[in-house]
Image (cartoon, rainbow, N blue to C red):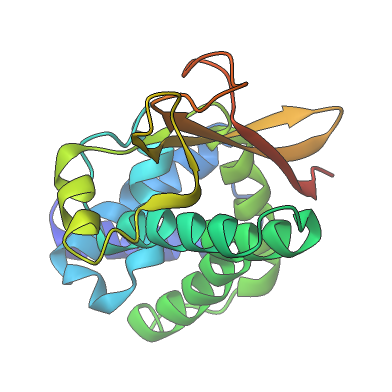
Length: 215
């Protein structure tokens, strides 16, 4: 399938009043979107690149897009600066994960790239896509790789938590984040390494934040 055919497939899917709005349909759409967006170099829409990769890979350990780096940098800064203030951390964590940014940028991107053939209601489409995508990326971790860690270390250690250390006094880093679901709520689990005092191990979440409800 060439790029013109991919673009036409996207337009056909979006304009179809009987489109497949299941998780399978959302996966197919994201695969088409990534193929098309990569040919256009994403036009600086890093949040779209992140979510395309997140829905299509079980772990983003090897992905190094700017949005992925932003998540680790932003979360470590906000958790460090707002230690103990869970409402503030939850607000900034939601911003870092970027549910609304993805929805808004997806609508803007599709209007810009597919304007010549698109006549469907993009707000309705982006709403159901976001719900499906959240379901898809549950339990798909975004792990800290060596490239991201080196980048963060070179930015005045903004990637490490400043308010906790390991039992040996070593700096503590966020090793991965993962979205899970508990009683219909979207939960952000934050894992760290090495484990600080009073934290059992690196295989259990260091902090857990409720971000949203799943309808």
